[in-house]
Image (cartoon, rainbow, N blue to C red; front, side):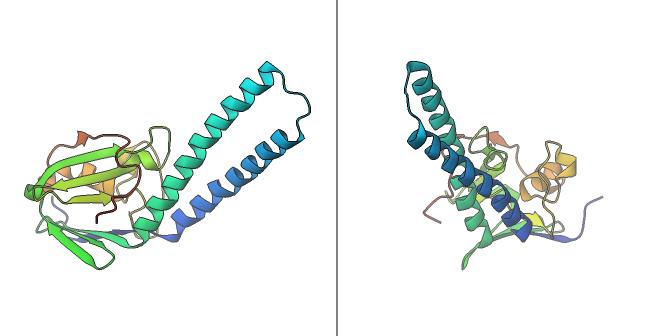
Length: 190
């Protein structure tokens, strides 16, 4: 049976708390890494290779963290409403509003972004037949919920997983695997 409610997805403070929870250790690890570089007395080949490996890993992690912050700040000004009765989607970002139906969708990319990131891999991009790209960040949740698991049935209050769960009843097209690193950051042109 089709749900008759309108579901509204937006960013909440639990996402912000999670970001601070991962940002503070990242800052401490970076400070410790800088301390080790400054305090290191002798530099042999093994030490240099270890520091290069640590620097690459740290750079990747900090880039993912930066991408998570940028997508969260985008999500703060974004809402997605899904009217289950009319199957109409209303995407709002800042002062722009775009309404569309599943028949207006040309492509739908799920799980775009950094492969190793717990957050950025769950962003969604909807490309309408008009050519408009709608970036639906992972941070959009229904109500005051925030849960990231690998089981879609537990994540139906996340916009991406909600659409995946009710895809057939909404007549939404099949999702595609999109260009993974093209959508690390929200598009500038929205």
